[in-house]
Image (cartoon, rainbow, N blue to C red; front, side, top):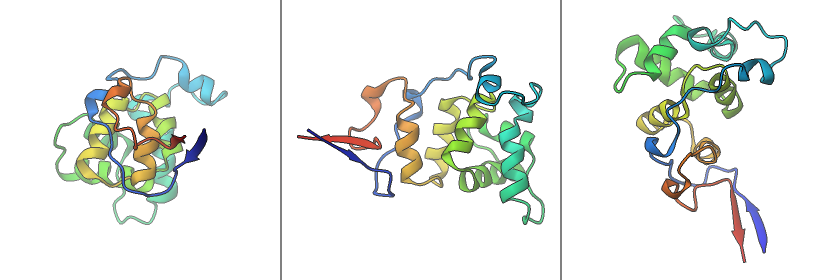
Length: 151
């Protein structure tokens, strides 16, 4: 059997939001992931959100705030600044930064999957990586993981 790694942008599907957990990361996970970080930098003050805003959105004429991203990810149809904030987060953050923000309780996997599916801005590589975190793998299309097995 051969393992095929598919980290490219070959088209694939993102599992539906209901495949993912609606729960936030466990309390204390952010401190385990980043020892020494200020424990107050979670939730709407997640350090990963501020990092991406400061590093990748610094050229924006009016960059979003971490709170706008946090609030926008909790809305079924964000509008105005919150819509722009979520869009910017999805486009500018790497999957690793999305993972760190999840660990910092900025959102649940379900909230992130809903936003990624709604806006379609994160790319197929990130869809594949997020699909590995599905709580209900039966809802993930088989060709939508970053790893495949070939007989």
